[in-house]
Image 1 (spheres, rainbow, N blue to C red):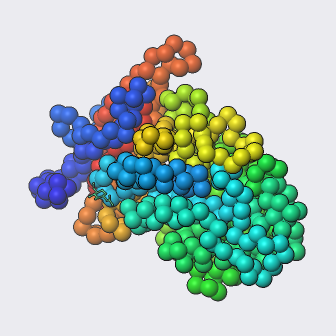
Image 2: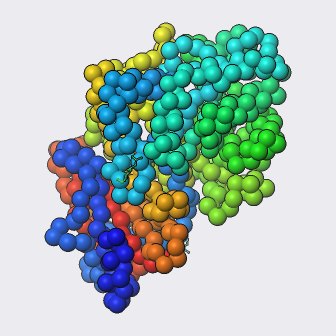
Length: 512
Ligand SMILES: *[C@@H]1O[C@H](CO)[C@@H](O)[C@H](O)[C@H]1NC(C)=O
Ligand SMILES: *[C@@H]1O[C@H](CO)[C@@H](O)[C@H](O)[C@H]1NC(C)=O
């Protein structure tokens, strides 16, 4: 309503002078603001003819359009689903408040609007027990395959999420094939290559099983962390050639059973090997894959460029089916990172924004996800006997046994990033990254991502968003958090805003 009023009233003025910043979401280092919405005072911030630049100068180039951002979120592990389900039973109002705060992607909602989750196929280190969808040894035809091995609370929570955000993108993947396809256990080891076709069929049946439960699948990966074999929880080391052969077989099966829209995403492991595993996967089986995904635990985010320099990002106008013919075009996803209990709240937020929720996008990612969506204050529940997550992993939100919950730094970091790219219109386009650079004497103080969200109607103005980390806090010398007076340059006009130390998301509208 407010927007259309503005459009009508200001339609008489010069178009370029109409652009104003009305909406700000902010999380500050001192937690005075926690993903807090406000409008600038005393009035909106106007874009005016340019004057001198501020201490920092954000220069936007909206002619440079990059990848679509599909959303932020985390993994709905069995543990996360269990703890959320327990909350639902104990305090249903608190549960629905939490679900709404996490997943409501409606424009203007007081919610992070998380829109991308990973769901394990079978057990992980965050399950009550070890299981696959077919634990009958030697059952190569998969007669005994049953999606029903998934705990019922996973389906309950998934359906509740979808009831709030029908556009939720669900990315499924196994932590291990069934033990009998390996050396008898899901814990570590490798797939017996004679089961490659069986494993492809297992993954097809998984997608069908989710569909039968009313859960649409956006993407599937062949194997979580194929370079990690750990004898204390479901893991599997999988050479490139095996993953590639499963990918090719699975692509044929998915296409043959009406799942040609389901993306296959390769690799699912750390930045550190970006130049090797995912590149070799593309060389051996690129046509079967829609993209590759990275985890944050080893290496650094700039190593994503070792992949994207060889396999540039798909642009959003190329449909998935069409782009499969162009083996060199691949999407990139950031699908896992975890905080650990005991680390510093504000230091974590700086690292997350710099490396993941602004940084990884700048290096081509279309998503930003943490590991467990929800855990208790001790990083539980967890699979008995696993040595993973030591020190304990922190969930995106903490859910307590007394029926209360609280968001962690992972929530605030992702919420600030998510808000910038959610569709402005119901069913409308998602945000795309656009060109941005930072000048000025304090250019090092800001880390900036810029995005455009296009509209359904050609008469409606695009939304232009910035996600800005000001990390000028003096933390390495003498603690001294300094707000940075910043000019924002857009199409020859200039706005001025002083960014406090923290993370700020703001936007304005302009004609396309
Ligand atoms: C803006 O981006 C376009 C498209 O990538 C590019 O051709 C142009 O040189 C850029 N402009 C500036 C000032 O960098
Ligand atoms: C999402 O938020 C909008 C705007 O605040 C609200 O009208 C709507 O009821 C919410 N949707 C759900 C499913 O909670």
